Length: 116
Length: 111
Image 1 (cartoon, rainbow over the protein chains, first blue to last red):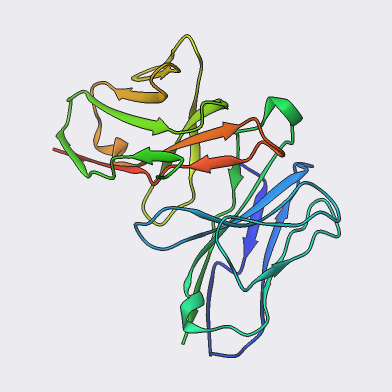
Image 2 (tube, helix red, strand yellow; image 1 turned 90 degrees about the horizontal axis):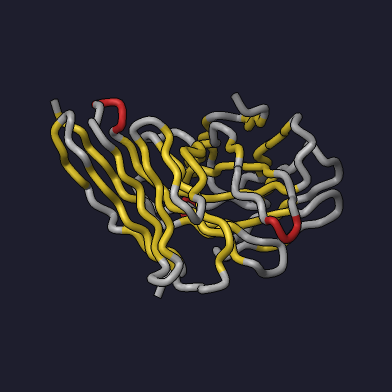
């Protein structure tokens, strides 16, 4: 089993609240990702990181922000949650293998966010 | 046009059937190819990598056709437990070697 953890598993909050979704991995992976996925729909990359102090925006525009102060920790923050943010958020990590790429992603169990 | 395209399905097959999915990719510079499996409301998990010469893992066979830019997944002797969404993943030789996921093909195996 992969050693990547997300908390909380489920979160129901009111509009306008600030929230942080936690993601931690103990595999020493350099690369980490955040994906957003609605039920029955495809994964959308919203943020990724190559390593400490590296953060990049993904393909899907998102109002969230991320930080990477430690290798093992990649939290995602929404400053002011809205109903349109309701979705499943999946964190993943992989080894960064440069030109060799790295297709083996380990995913956390996800956070199901509902904004009322 | 999406970079990685899959027929969303669903593919409804009886137990014991053989089923095959294709996935097409648009970037000829794509380097690495993978199949992931995602169960309903769960996270995706790596099923198998796809090698140029084709590879097999039990009832699962993956093949790559670089000339036509597609990969395939064949499942023999389908089990009820094979019911899931199968995601095609492609990495491209650009900065960071980003992975691109297809939209997934849903498989339903019926008794």
